[in-house]
View 1 (spheres, rainbow, N blue to C red):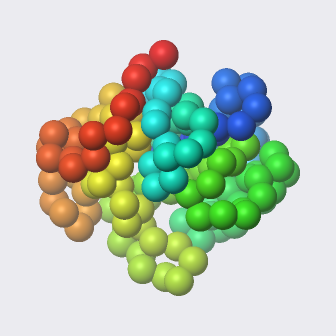
View 2 (cartoon, rainbow, N blue to C red):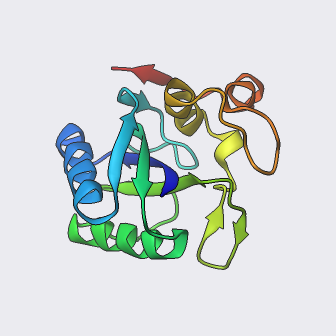
Amino acid sequence: MNKAYLLTGSNEGDRHSHLKKVAEHLENAVGTIIQCSSIYETAPWGKPDQPNFLNQALLLSTSLDAVSMMGLILQIELIMGRKRMEKYGSRIVDIDILLFNHEVRDDPDLKIPHPELSNRRFALVPLDEISPSLKHPLLHKTIHVLLQECPDKLDVKKI
């Protein structure tokens, strides 16, 4: 089985409900959720003039490969009403693959590990909660060390 670390997020509508539904869709279509972080309210990254996000890190066990999983993730986002209108814009749901096993991919449509992981507190804080000793396959540092070194200072509050 493969281990996938995902980050889910929402900043439109009933954010709590959206995160819960995302988790249900992932369990039904992608794999078994082994661990989930607390939910964090986070300041928007990349485009500050929008509502705060709720984010949660999930560890899934899946028989899928990363490409197949990404296809299902995009379908889940579409089913839940995600419209890709503007980069870093508001969204009803967002699902990012942060890490997949120790895999490194640099495909046009799929980059693993997530290329901005080490620069985003909103991803590192929940990931540090569930797997602080996990090593980044390119940077060879633990998630905990990456969080300590992260240049991002935006608010991330456990709720």
